[in-house]
Figure 1 (cartoon, rainbow, N blue to C red):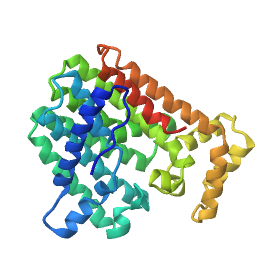
Figure 2: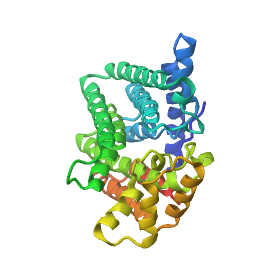
Figure 3: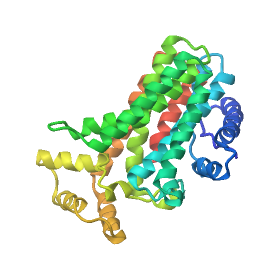
Figure 4: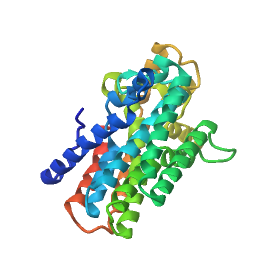
Length: 334
């Protein structure tokens, strides 16, 4: 399987990273393989469905601020993607998502218990890989894993009494998505021997670009079809999970500035969306509401803030590529 590297603006850099990314892909397949056929099938299910490989790309790209790609960098790239894949198995169970990357979710094929245990297995494989990279790498993995769990827990529990739902949600995104992308950036610089200042810059960048990416996904989930995204549009709406566009609607309602169409949308969102027709109707009206533009702008601001974190880095093709990378993550909303 060959991974697709995004266009980063420097053909020489892209060529090197594409070769390295192909090697990461080969190692991912090997790391997910298991001697028991059913376990092998479940653990490679989402891997075979493809993916953007954002985290491995970032590991490889940030290693350019040190000595470049080496054995440890490659191993950490595999570990971060395995960790990400593991979270997807768990997320799909919790969200009752029928599709992932255009294929039936693992729990739809084998049931919740097998999907959860497969995710656990991939977490274990990732941890074994990281254990060879030294105590600091293990700590990076453990802290990211803790934040992943806390993000999911806080999303499940919702904001506390008197807590503003929007900052609460942004923290959920920082924990569930930003933490592992920041860990990827940390690995690339740390394991290539980059300066500490470069490490801190790309970690801050990774956290913010992760939030931008997820905010963009909130928009894409509403405006795209299943064939484009590989996921069923509006799954979060049906499950009662309020993503940023809905939270912005509710914030306007609380402030007394929501228009009549928005008021009706909120009422319908709190109603029965079990039928495909009801969900399609709400999706259509939400796509037409200007709250979607507000959510788009929020994603772009987080992307711009991520790029601003790169200021301490010297000008280079790698820094330019990180700026392009941040833009690509939110340009998907167009």
